Image 1 (cartoon, rainbow, N blue to C red):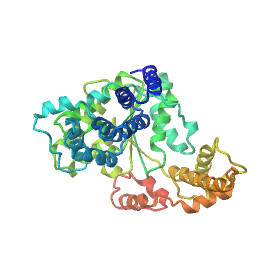
Image 2 (image 1 turned 30 degrees about the horizontal axis):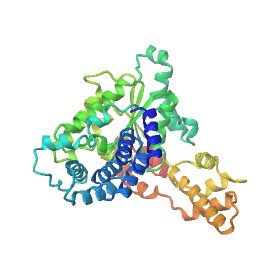
Image 3 (image 1 turned 135 degrees about the vertical axis):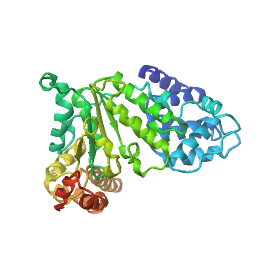
Image 4 (image 1 turned 180 degrees about the horizontal axis):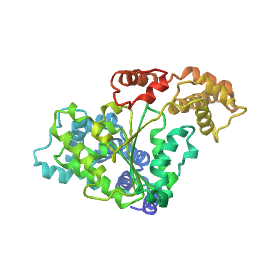
Length: 420
């Protein structure tokens, strides 16, 4: 459904806020369009209007699941399945969520699986994802502070083959391929992927485990194929696989054959065995590259594995400037704050700015007079915020020292100032 149609529904709901069927239609269309925050708001209103509305509770659970908030989705759907009027779709969703956590499946109603699936409708399946239109991010490399070495690697591998194809064609190189980004959480891997699409003016499709895995045999592979086909149909397109270790885990660690089949399908899609992948740019991100099956690092797949470290001082200054842009601030000594935040990730720096704003908000509420953010506020906030990368480096250090025969994690050692 187009944005214009959704806008018309929103206008109609504004005129008739008590019209529950109309609001339910709006919430469903917002969810289908991927506008999860707005869909959640509408489903919550429906739930407040009628706490016994099973469809509103189910819609809220689906919204949580689609946005990756699995724990919240489980709470809502488990409560719903405890009711006598629980719809069949609630059992399907509960089974889907439990299967991802390795728990026992939900006890479904006394119906055949095919009938249950038909009644339930797509939970996270092919029908829900195959037709999604890629978004067109406006984010570019200019909006991301630092990481110049990583940006240049991505330019050479992904951006220049599209923007300057004649040079690459002279050397027999095609546009396309894959890069795996790894590093501690919160250091900008997802932002980088979006910025690649923004630099190219290309479409951007992000997929995660919740878009692929299903309880039905063969359905997960079908979902994965549909996602790749959608990206191919919208070339040039950046297909971003977040937390790729969940979909590409080492097969030697698996006991069940179902997970192996998904990995085999993933490898086949990257190879382009039954389709042309030219113009399809695949980026993956992971916090645990040591859990990724080695077959994915073969040339032609994710042949470049790039370490995304926490920002250096210059990058921290740039991130702080970006985070403070448009905020009331005066005479900020970005260098002093950057020096105080050694080892902080980009997400940590955002948290520092948020804490500084909270400090000023508390004072403004007491005095009634808003004051701009100062360097002192940021330094005080930095003392309260602890860097979140240390735990990751403690784990990565062991892999880099004792499981690094091919030199894959040499950049981690260099960052830590260690040698093998």
